[in-house]
Image 1 (spheres, rainbow, N blue to C red):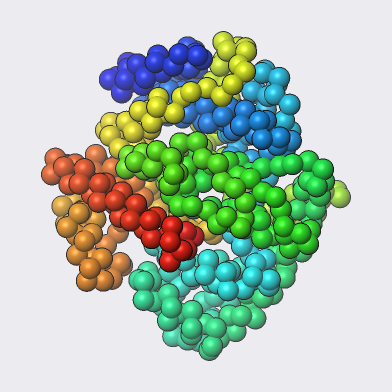
Image 2 (cartoon, rainbow, N blue to C red):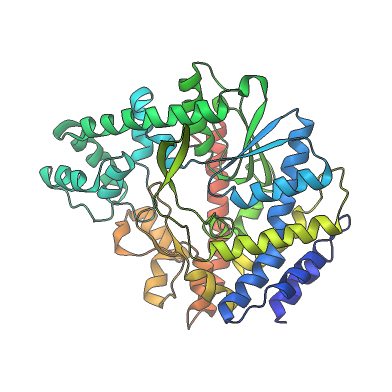
Length: 461
């Protein structure tokens, strides 16, 4: 067993009230990994992913029960593993909650907003991402790719060039004033609204008599915001909405309900974000089905339409490991009457994996495909090795110079998991030292922005 696995085991041993370690050992024994990639995935999933997600799920169940919640909607796709764990924990521990898996995506929840919350929908369409292009903006509006190319050609705008901060405002003005963008976006929104309305009525039509809450990974609160706006539109009254999240980088819009966070939030253990990577986290908890594009009616039931038949290549194996771990866990911990105290252990595990990965961990997870766009387009590997030249724009000095002087973003290729890229780099000693300072600067910059938000001068979304 390698040093990282031994360290993870030492952390799991610290848990006082529940046994997290033996289920992990039994799971690793059962799954006979033949390749180095399978060994890494089995070890990390058994010793880190499964214990952390299970502890979070248990906290959600007990807290929801205390608040009088009767139904939990686990939001696709990040909520898939948590949903399966919740079913097992409720049965084993006698928790009286109804758990449902809600097929949706940021994309499908945002499309209908264009016809009843137009300016908000436009703000989301023209939201910056690491590799956002003009084509992606039009795809976010539900416009077909061929139509998008024609629209952009008519206004003489390159479809595939990455947009910098000043491009978004210019592109928005030109699309709304000089092209049929509004017509295509409206048509897409009308079609999406019919599908989303039918699915919401099917899944949420009886929520007036069943207090409910959402469960998701978190980050900025946009899923709850979208759900709240759609729900209010479909049922013609606002939802009394609660949401449970692993962590949030900003305070969600209070008009959209309450946000309950387990691992970190602006008001709870926010320092943990220094050693946390939400992009990698999404790869750890993703479902093995594709992104929800819309809904269709089959045999008098509305079902999701996926972008792909399957999700990421590793997801099925990873989810099987989590299911096996959960079965062993409930057998070894048959009774539990309160939420387990596991946050400090979870922080130690995730910090080691995310901020200080081993070479094998960095190699495996860096090769996973990831996109930060709501349409799931522009897929890239999670991390690639850095040369000194490529690292410079993402270093502390390079970042400050780029922000101060407004250097165009397309001149460098950001990493979705910068710690993984650094670990894979051949000359990484100076990079690792620089990363320590960079994490601190980014953390304090987020703290400053949050204080700015507190006084109402900057939207948390």
